[in-house]
Image (cartoon, rainbow, N blue to C red; front, side, top):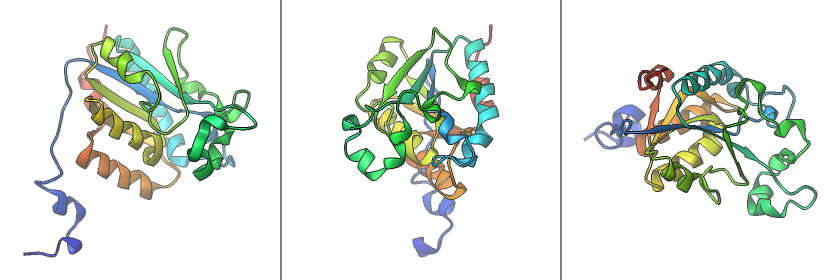
Length: 213
Protein backbone atom coordinates (compact mmCIF):
# COMPACT_ATOMS: atom_id res chain seq x y z
CA UNK A 1 0.00 0.00 0.00
CA UNK A 2 1.35 3.43 -0.93
CA UNK A 3 2.01 6.08 1.67
CA UNK A 4 -0.83 8.64 1.33
CA UNK A 5 1.54 11.43 2.38
CA UNK A 6 3.64 10.81 -0.73
CA UNK A 7 0.76 10.63 -3.22
CA UNK A 8 -0.30 13.37 -5.57
CA UNK A 9 -3.28 15.20 -4.03
CA UNK A 10 -5.61 14.30 -6.89
CA UNK A 11 -4.64 10.64 -6.68
CA UNK A 12 -4.92 10.67 -2.90
CA UNK A 13 -8.49 12.04 -2.99
CA UNK A 14 -9.63 9.96 -5.99
CA UNK A 15 -12.62 7.77 -5.23
CA UNK A 16 -13.03 9.27 -1.77
CA UNK A 17 -13.39 13.05 -2.08
CA UNK A 18 -14.19 13.56 -5.77
CA UNK A 19 -17.97 13.19 -6.12
CA UNK A 20 -19.88 15.66 -8.30
CA UNK A 21 -23.17 17.17 -7.14
CA UNK A 22 -24.29 18.90 -10.34
CA UNK A 23 -26.92 21.55 -10.90
CA UNK A 24 -30.43 21.23 -9.53
CA UNK A 25 -33.69 22.71 -10.83
CA UNK A 26 -33.20 26.43 -10.14
CA UNK A 27 -29.96 28.37 -9.80
CA UNK A 28 -29.13 31.81 -8.44
CA UNK A 29 -25.93 33.77 -8.98
CA UNK A 30 -24.38 35.09 -5.78
CA UNK A 31 -21.87 37.89 -6.34
CA UNK A 32 -19.74 37.92 -3.20
CA UNK A 33 -18.02 41.11 -2.02
CA UNK A 34 -16.61 42.52 -5.24
CA UNK A 35 -15.38 45.63 -3.39
CA UNK A 36 -12.95 48.12 -4.91
CA UNK A 37 -10.42 47.65 -2.11
CA UNK A 38 -9.48 44.32 -3.69
CA UNK A 39 -8.69 45.94 -7.04
CA UNK A 40 -6.90 49.19 -6.14
CA UNK A 41 -3.11 48.74 -6.43
CA UNK A 42 -1.42 49.56 -3.15
CA UNK A 43 -4.57 49.04 -1.07
CA UNK A 44 -4.07 46.70 1.90
CA UNK A 45 -6.67 44.30 0.52
CA UNK A 46 -5.36 44.41 -3.06
CA UNK A 47 -5.58 40.98 -4.68
CA UNK A 48 -4.22 40.49 -8.21
CA UNK A 49 -6.34 37.37 -8.57
CA UNK A 50 -9.48 39.43 -8.09
CA UNK A 51 -8.38 41.82 -10.82
CA UNK A 52 -7.81 38.87 -13.15
CA UNK A 53 -11.24 37.44 -12.32
CA UNK A 54 -13.10 40.68 -13.00
CA UNK A 55 -13.67 40.44 -16.78
CA UNK A 56 -14.81 36.83 -16.44
CA UNK A 57 -17.17 37.78 -13.62
CA UNK A 58 -18.59 40.65 -15.64
CA UNK A 59 -19.29 38.26 -18.51
CA UNK A 60 -20.94 35.72 -16.20
CA UNK A 61 -23.07 38.42 -14.60
CA UNK A 62 -24.23 39.67 -18.00
CA UNK A 63 -25.15 36.14 -19.07
CA UNK A 64 -27.09 35.48 -15.86
CA UNK A 65 -29.02 38.72 -16.26
CA UNK A 66 -29.80 37.93 -19.88
CA UNK A 67 -31.19 34.55 -18.82
CA UNK A 68 -33.32 36.08 -16.07
CA UNK A 69 -31.51 34.23 -13.31
CA UNK A 70 -31.89 35.56 -9.76
CA UNK A 71 -28.81 37.66 -8.94
CA UNK A 72 -27.92 38.55 -5.36
CA UNK A 73 -24.93 40.69 -4.36
CA UNK A 74 -23.23 40.88 -0.99
CA UNK A 75 -21.16 43.60 0.57
CA UNK A 76 -19.61 44.24 3.98
CA UNK A 77 -20.37 47.18 6.24
CA UNK A 78 -19.31 47.91 9.80
CA UNK A 79 -20.25 50.48 12.38
CA UNK A 80 -17.53 53.12 12.05
CA UNK A 81 -15.23 54.10 14.90
CA UNK A 82 -16.09 51.32 17.38
CA UNK A 83 -16.72 48.43 14.97
CA UNK A 84 -18.84 46.57 17.52
CA UNK A 85 -20.58 44.51 14.84
CA UNK A 86 -17.26 43.08 13.66
CA UNK A 87 -16.69 41.09 16.84
CA UNK A 88 -13.68 38.80 17.04
CA UNK A 89 -13.46 38.70 13.23
CA UNK A 90 -12.12 42.25 13.16
CA UNK A 91 -9.66 41.45 15.92
CA UNK A 92 -8.28 38.67 13.72
CA UNK A 93 -8.60 40.63 10.46
CA UNK A 94 -8.39 44.37 11.26
CA UNK A 95 -7.73 45.09 7.57
CA UNK A 96 -11.47 44.63 7.06
CA UNK A 97 -12.14 47.85 8.99
CA UNK A 98 -11.95 49.57 5.60
CA UNK A 99 -15.48 48.28 4.98
CA UNK A 100 -17.36 51.32 6.29
CA UNK A 101 -19.78 53.62 4.54
CA UNK A 102 -17.96 56.40 2.66
CA UNK A 103 -14.69 54.55 2.18
CA UNK A 104 -14.07 54.10 -1.58
CA UNK A 105 -12.50 50.70 -0.84
CA UNK A 106 -15.92 49.52 0.37
CA UNK A 107 -17.75 50.46 -2.83
CA UNK A 108 -18.75 47.95 -5.49
CA UNK A 109 -16.45 47.43 -8.45
CA UNK A 110 -18.26 49.18 -11.31
CA UNK A 111 -17.83 46.25 -13.71
CA UNK A 112 -20.07 44.05 -11.54
CA UNK A 113 -22.09 46.62 -9.60
CA UNK A 114 -25.68 45.68 -8.79
CA UNK A 115 -28.56 47.03 -10.82
CA UNK A 116 -31.17 49.03 -8.88
CA UNK A 117 -33.59 46.10 -8.92
CA UNK A 118 -31.03 43.54 -7.71
CA UNK A 119 -30.89 42.56 -4.06
CA UNK A 120 -27.86 43.52 -1.98
CA UNK A 121 -27.33 41.63 1.28
CA UNK A 122 -25.00 43.29 3.77
CA UNK A 123 -22.92 41.07 6.01
CA UNK A 124 -20.29 41.42 8.71
CA UNK A 125 -18.63 37.99 8.57
CA UNK A 126 -17.06 35.89 5.80
CA UNK A 127 -20.06 33.70 4.95
CA UNK A 128 -22.88 35.29 2.96
CA UNK A 129 -25.25 33.04 4.93
CA UNK A 130 -24.08 33.81 8.47
CA UNK A 131 -26.40 36.26 10.21
CA UNK A 132 -28.20 37.22 6.99
CA UNK A 133 -31.50 36.53 5.21
CA UNK A 134 -29.82 34.84 2.24
CA UNK A 135 -31.00 31.27 2.89
CA UNK A 136 -34.73 32.06 3.38
CA UNK A 137 -34.63 34.46 0.43
CA UNK A 138 -33.25 31.71 -1.82
CA UNK A 139 -35.82 29.21 -0.49
CA UNK A 140 -38.65 31.63 -1.26
CA UNK A 141 -37.34 31.94 -4.83
CA UNK A 142 -37.32 28.16 -5.23
CA UNK A 143 -33.54 28.09 -5.58
CA UNK A 144 -31.68 24.85 -4.92
CA UNK A 145 -28.33 25.72 -6.53
CA UNK A 146 -26.07 28.67 -5.72
CA UNK A 147 -23.41 29.73 -8.20
CA UNK A 148 -20.67 31.73 -6.50
CA UNK A 149 -18.29 34.33 -7.86
CA UNK A 150 -16.37 37.07 -6.10
CA UNK A 151 -13.65 37.30 -3.49
CA UNK A 152 -11.70 36.17 -1.84
CA UNK A 153 -11.40 32.47 -2.67
CA UNK A 154 -9.83 31.52 0.64
CA UNK A 155 -12.11 33.76 2.70
CA UNK A 156 -15.67 34.70 1.84
CA UNK A 157 -16.02 32.31 -1.11
CA UNK A 158 -14.91 29.32 0.91
CA UNK A 159 -17.02 30.28 3.93
CA UNK A 160 -20.08 30.82 1.74
CA UNK A 161 -19.52 27.51 -0.04
CA UNK A 162 -19.33 25.59 3.24
CA UNK A 163 -22.41 27.32 4.65
CA UNK A 164 -24.28 26.90 1.37
CA UNK A 165 -23.82 23.15 1.61
CA UNK A 166 -24.84 23.17 5.28
CA UNK A 167 -28.03 25.07 4.38
CA UNK A 168 -28.92 22.39 1.86
CA UNK A 169 -27.94 24.10 -1.39
CA UNK A 170 -25.93 22.69 -4.26
CA UNK A 171 -22.84 24.90 -4.48
CA UNK A 172 -21.06 25.78 -7.72
CA UNK A 173 -17.94 27.97 -7.80
CA UNK A 174 -16.84 29.40 -11.14
CA UNK A 175 -13.07 29.03 -11.23
CA UNK A 176 -12.36 31.99 -13.51
CA UNK A 177 -14.69 34.29 -11.58
CA UNK A 178 -13.11 34.11 -8.12
CA UNK A 179 -9.75 35.43 -6.98
CA UNK A 180 -7.35 35.89 -4.10
CA UNK A 181 -4.21 37.83 -3.24
CA UNK A 182 -1.92 34.82 -3.87
CA UNK A 183 -2.34 31.77 -6.13
CA UNK A 184 -1.42 29.23 -3.44
CA UNK A 185 -4.42 29.76 -1.10
CA UNK A 186 -6.60 30.33 -4.17
CA UNK A 187 -5.78 26.92 -5.64
CA UNK A 188 -5.77 25.13 -2.29
CA UNK A 189 -9.24 26.37 -1.44
CA UNK A 190 -10.65 25.60 -4.87
CA UNK A 191 -9.29 22.07 -4.46
CA UNK A 192 -10.86 21.76 -1.02
CA UNK A 193 -14.23 23.18 -2.09
CA UNK A 194 -14.35 20.89 -5.10
CA UNK A 195 -13.44 17.90 -2.95
CA UNK A 196 -15.87 18.37 -0.07
CA UNK A 197 -18.37 21.21 -0.39
CA UNK A 198 -19.43 21.80 -3.98
CA UNK A 199 -18.37 21.67 -7.60
CA UNK A 200 -15.70 23.97 -9.00
CA UNK A 201 -16.72 24.59 -12.60
CA UNK A 202 -15.64 26.63 -15.60
CA UNK A 203 -17.83 29.55 -16.54
CA UNK A 204 -18.73 27.82 -19.82
CA UNK A 205 -20.33 25.01 -17.82
CA UNK A 206 -22.45 27.62 -16.08
CA UNK A 207 -23.35 29.25 -19.40
CA UNK A 208 -24.46 25.88 -20.77
CA UNK A 209 -27.14 25.68 -18.06
CA UNK A 210 -28.66 29.03 -19.01
CA UNK A 211 -31.60 29.52 -21.35
CA UNK A 212 -31.20 33.03 -22.66
CA UNK A 213 -34.08 35.18 -23.75
